[in-house]
Image 1 (cartoon, helix red, strand yellow):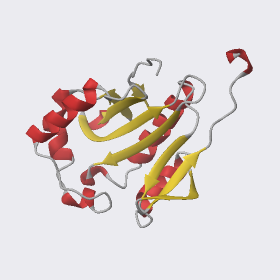
Image 2: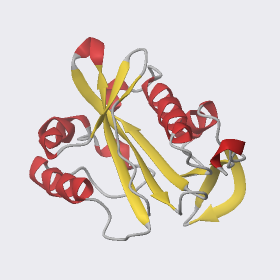
Image 3: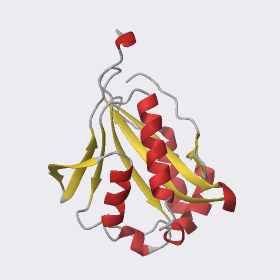
Image 4: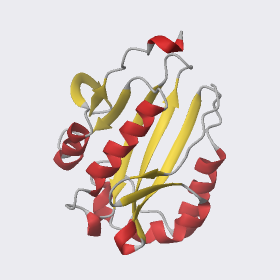
Amino acid sequence: MDALKIEAVETERLSLVPLAVEHADEMADVLSDPALHAFTGGTPYSAQALRSRYARLVAGSPHASQTWWNWVIRLRAEKRLVGTVQATITGGEFERAAEVAWVVGTRWQGRGIATEAARALVAWLREQEVGAIRAHIHPDHHASAAVAGAAGLAPTSHRHEGEIRWELPATRPSADRF
């Protein structure tokens, strides 16, 4: 896959900052509520386990056909991290697709942060000429479905491991790309 570079993304209230191992300690606190795993399974990571996970993510995908882009969400007014957004990119230059996900710590939910971050992520991916953008959401996770809808994704009839695929279809390539 051709090498594209992750960069910071700014919104009105947020900075999406490329993930670094140094974010793990603060993010362990942000993601410590077991309720965040109600639809995805698992349990919160310790700071040490999150450092190891972030080191693997920052190192990049071991598969040449995938690129991993991960950001932490910084709420500038509070000068702190409040969640993450991520995109796994597959395909080549003319057929890139992204699988996206987001999570905002429980204390910051209900403030539109996930929606603002997901919209910024989708817009940035479009600027990088990523075509189809997908998310898989548990059918009972209404808040995440609302975020996906606000970011322009729509539910499809496809299911994967009990989750609904939401998708923003690929746009037509611009004429100047040929």
